[in-house]
Image (cartoon, rainbow, N blue to C red; front, side, top):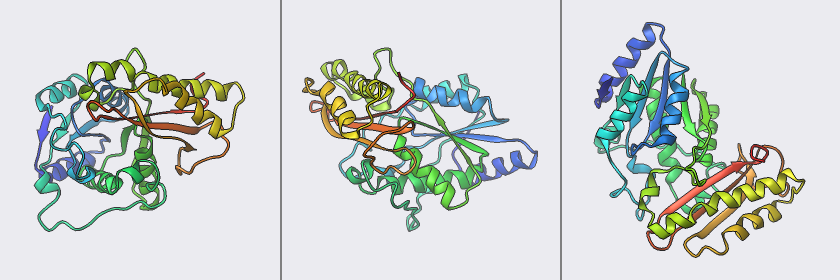
Amino acid sequence: MKRISDIDEMIRTCAAIRSEGKSIGLVPTMGALHDGHRSLLKIARGRCDILVTSIFVNPSQFGPNEDLAKYPRQIGKDCALCEAEGVDIVFMPLPNEMYVEDYSTWIKVDDVSAPLEGERRPGHFIGVATVVLKFFNIVTPNFAVFGQKDAQQLAVIRRMVRDLNVPVEIIAAPIVREEDGLAMSSRNIYLSTSERKSAPAIFRGLRAASRLFANGEFDASILCRRVRHELSSFEKLAIEYVSLADSLTMREQVNAGDGSLISIAVRTPESGTRLIDNVILGEIK
């Protein structure tokens, strides 16, 4: 497995790979890899000749009061996991090379980025869309794999690729969960013991709404209320929003249908950890 930090070297390496007629798969990450990331790598590994993983804690997608400084960094462990999963190249660019001193070009995906996470994290999706497009330009992958847990991010990237005619296939990977249902996340390590015990209620609420839908309930307000009810007895989980929206446009729906996205964001009061999760209605019975 090769490690590359220099952007120009990465461009040359990927150009040489493409000139040989080989396909490239990309799994972009911010590191602190876990079994959720491992599942993305497995999906990608089976579809390409050369698998590239980027590890880059992207400063432009963090707000002024967010956890950029303390975001977990474990390059040694991350590279070991990548090598075990058959990654060919780990791309680890430096922030001051990705964003030079007079950097001034940003990608804004209107509409789909505005509600939910976009409303609560101003500028977040500008940072996400910009860094992803930069990776696409540097690596020139045939496809890239993103996790369904960040559902709105997935919608933003899909819209960007469509609108800008970027020749990269976007593949969505299912959410990987702990045995008790908590969606795997690099931020789970911040949870206190009591918060970790409460956190599985998030998925229980989503699953309860999904079962209600499977039994014939389509009213979005009732489905969202069912999620809130499941979490109502857990003081360790402060709900920021519960949403039922179209999974491609992120527009709120009055009535749910197969493929509707019910999503949630909570914040834990002790550690201040922010957790998001979602299910696509019709996929969980």
